[in-house]
Length: 526
Image 1 (cartoon, rainbow, N blue to C red):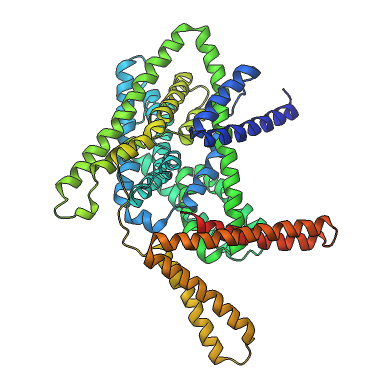
Image 2 (image 1 turned 120 degrees about the horizontal axis):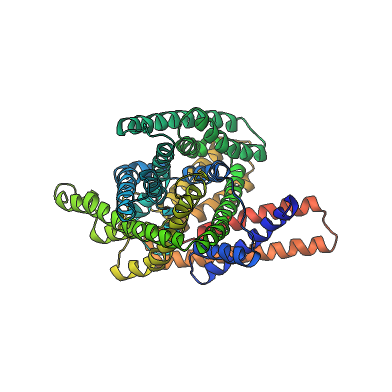
């Protein structure tokens, strides 16, 4: 297969990924599992198993995914739940790595410790983003979602740090606990320093850019550049990207314009979908070669199951034990002195069962050096674990939430409706001031704008004060406005079809209608 054929092959795979994802959403099936199965089927039908460069997978695919997760992290919520997040993202990851390595080695005494620890590090970080897609369909405490999202952000870094140490241990016999600890510290310190510098430079650059396309391109370049620079300096590229993304996410509200925010969000969502889809499909394709080699040697398949099954059990049990012993039990002991920080049994159950593995595990498995000990067995085991968590945990998480009847708790902050009414009221007060204090204001335009803001403030205040009934009245008004946008759009297209407006006018008015439609759809979100 030459380069052109391979390019067309990738396009076909992406088209298939779009169809599979759409079908999975329609039948409430985990999209990641559908893509994995699709990749396996494509490999079996097409008979093609690509040779994937391990380094390229890690360096090209992972940085944008990490940057996107870090950029959209709610920083204030993250800081509020930093204790549970660190417990899961560092403690649970290390505990899972050790437990998986110990159990797998106990069952497979001939396996080197480096392979066991590499597998433990690969499967240790859950993909809470995959779980979030399921969790968002159910009403849950905001604290629970924040903890899972924060865990997903930091545990990728800690898991891949352990992964790097495991790979280094396979190439040298002189690594000790002290050397491993010092390596962990140096990787962390250099990675964070490079990420902080990259984030600071990027915020300075973007704040001075007027071209939105260039600004968005710079965010992608910096994701790859911060990763590569940290790796070149002997630090953690993962931590560099996460730190850079966090800084940019915190500063975005000051340095991004409205157009930049809207276009960047759409661009990053599309790229994230493409990369996620490609990774899941590529692992399915790559497994064909592994399965062929296992079929040629029956002992390899047996060895793969002997490695995969203990790893699956150990991974499930390790998270259950960690959440129970370090989060639920201490909360119960201290609930009389600090009941706000207590984790209820229902919340602990969901935290334990939301350990779905996903794209980071896939990328790390694919990125193992080709000469790494037991590489085929590790990739097979990682694949089996992802399938298991997607089917067992992903398939039952919604049912579990309904069975234990977990409910959101009341928020201490003001509601969205109240915040919106206060925001619009500030503009209303400013308009009233300008009306009385300036002679250079168009009275007719000012009165119309005052009426518009009074309506906005009144609608939000009534919806906040009167609850569901008024909220439904407001929703009907918004849906009516949305219908009118559709009427305007149809008229605009009829004018274009009749040749009465040119393309420039079409695109300008269409963009205004698009923004209005986005605003109304956002207000109609539950």
